Length: 75
Image 1 (tube, one colour):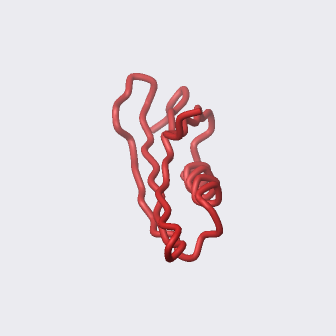
Image 2: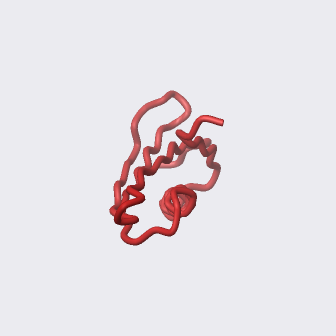
Image 3: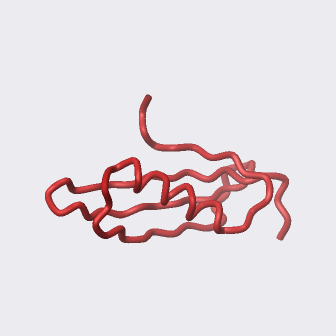
């Protein structure tokens, strides 16, 4: 199916003690309808920012053309 654009939300979690964590990606269309999602474990990450970057990469690898990314991290 072709979408005008999709919104991809990404997030991650990290445990400093063992440097393990995980990432999540949720894809929705312009109306907010669910399209796809994925979760992945991340082993031996150097920092939480690395996990966030890996989550963005995972979102880009889903092969959508027009993407609006949104991070769950408050600024």
